[in-house]
Length: 293
Image (cartoon, rainbow, N blue to C red; front, side, top):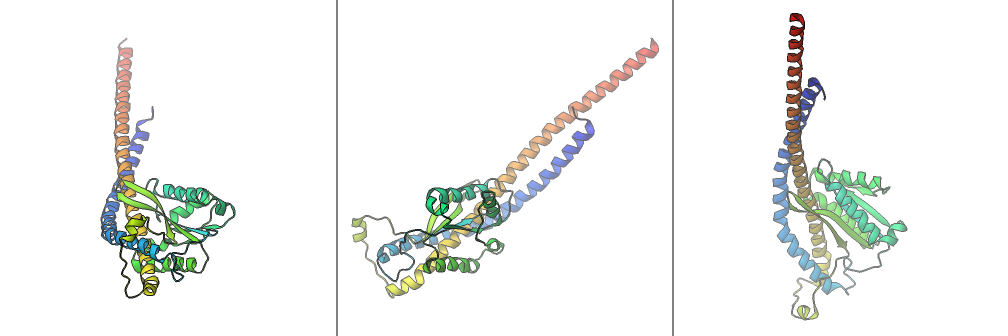
């Protein structure tokens, strides 16, 4: 059994750790509230815009001016992987990184083997995970989470769209954590480009009357790029809220585990102290009997 000094030192160390994890939990809870409000506000708008974008894709699929809906053989693929800049959030980063790698190896096995798949990483932690699989990201946009605004994200989304239009990539996949609640994050993989048409049957499509104003050309040039930028921004807001939820949950569990460990160590300390007192009493008793004998 460890001596009393060692146990006392361990108790003090675990108490210090518990203070840190408890403080991190409160900080994450405060940040989560702000991030959660942001994603909940944009979701209805982004969802309706995504629905509109899919229907527009159905209308524009045969239009030569629709550069964002053209379907090409995916010889060159870009995977945009969204993670976090900081750790201590459980399996948040490792799960989403493995999801992206699994997507590349299964859906784009041929492109992966021929080296025709690139990874763009938003968040430092995913880049670290990828390196353990001997995968080097071609670009890292970790600074976006330092000031997550639509204007800052717009520059990155435009760059990706331009690469697609210019033919640098034939397909762009987006991989991120969707915020469900503080304890649950869902790993999402969705095709960002080209825009997929809506899955509607012929009867439903015939019942839809499309009124395009001011013109089809303006919609192609203005609305579709803006809609794609909103979808990209929504993905980052989802990941940002999910990160704080994951970290708050992880720190909550760490705090509870530290409390349990302190209770165990305190019990061990009390037993050790009781044993030491008992031994001291026995030594005094035996010494007294030896003198009297």
